[in-house]
Length: 318
View 1 (spheres, rainbow, N blue to C red):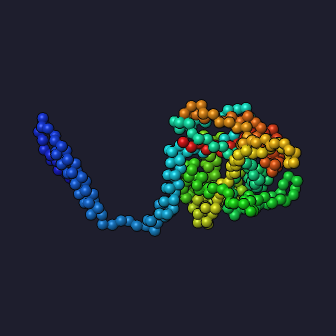
View 2: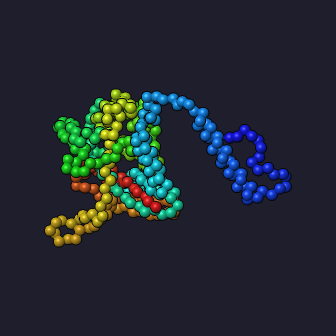
View 3: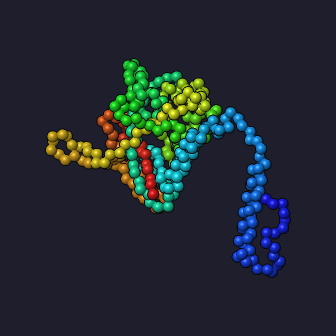
């Protein structure tokens, strides 16, 4: 800015400030700013450069653009009234969601299916039925010894089905997990689970979420974000869960019996009530309806607990 202390438009006490005077002041201010900016630019004769001058925290322009877009998209979801929650409902209990949206949102419910995985922890692999699972994209089929001592194969991805899962990097962005290139995968996984199971999501049982043998190896080796990116593994880390919804799920009739089937929505026995413009209640009356293929999960979780609880992904949209 100019070092002159002279007024742009000189007036004496008591004089009127006309519209013309005001316009003149604005024009002169803008001219002064332009002149100062140009003088500052002209005074720059050298800009320091380095090998990574075109990068920020190791990211090039494309990578930075992608990350910014993801963060903006997630932020806009919150601002536009879109919410995604993961809840554990128990029979006879009411779950109150304080969404603070200022209006009654559309509510969509998806049952979170159990699926068979191989969990690795403390140098031991075990057969499990998980709700959430971290694995590498290359881990499509894993082998493990079951409780009977038999070696079995587990398809983490269905052989003939579509690919499932969200890139782990996207989940880190979604839940605002902060990291640098020197952050270890072990620390990153710990921070992610803490953020993911924080409010407004519920805490899930420890034996119903885990990570794969590949993840444990990388965690034990204290592999950093930088190394994972250099090795090409960063984009292959997958967060998998299986939300399922069907309408008019038929049950209760034997084929050829002539009886009409009972039509139940899936998730069954679940009701939604809007308490006011900022609170929505979800009631699970019990029992939960599951697939016939869930027999292994029933044994793993326990019959009573399996029927008493219902794990849901709840979507709220204004």
